[in-house]
Length: 255
Image (cartoon, rainbow, N blue to C red; front, top):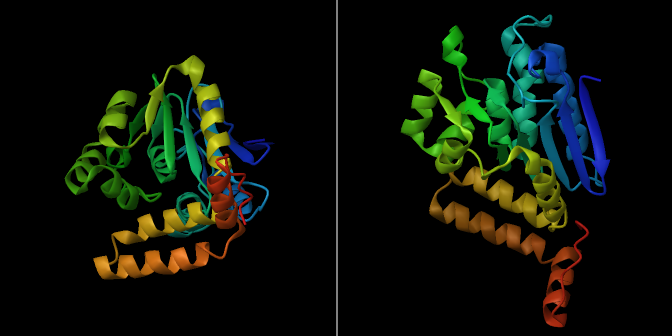
């Protein structure tokens, strides 16, 4: 299967499985990935989603030798790569990119759309859209300025500069770089921890952060207050308070 999904407790791992093409995706494959992301976002049994690539690459972006689809480029992006980015950013669950080797073009944008990025020492990120005369897509112009600032984002997008794993951590594109032979275990441990967090509160935190740049301070404070009012009604809040008073670890259930 070009897109493989596995589950371990509350963690779902989505693997782009096209290793002969460095996990590049054509129009149908990107639409399939978008469908998987959508389904997992609405699956109450899933509380953390990990995105990765099979073999020695994360994703080499658009497969120029593949099926370009039957619609216009804008239509194909809307149901494919752009839908993937939108689904990851708006998902009310933590999302993790496990990156080995190249994350290029749309592949780099997909990694940046995840909440957490853990990169092997051989990983690199490259938004090389302009190298072939294309404009950035897959949410790159939304996520990169928030991660690295406007000037650096424009530089990365205009020059197509390659960013290795340590530099990606320094820039804020990645959370951490990990030796290749430790990456699977490290991400599994982090994903398990993230899956145990209170899902409603996680969703609220993501929503508030991503929208904060579009609001004034007063609007942001108001939205925080409304979110807090909703959280106080949740079972996870009651469990959190009970665990705190009993001096034990909380057991959140995402309700």
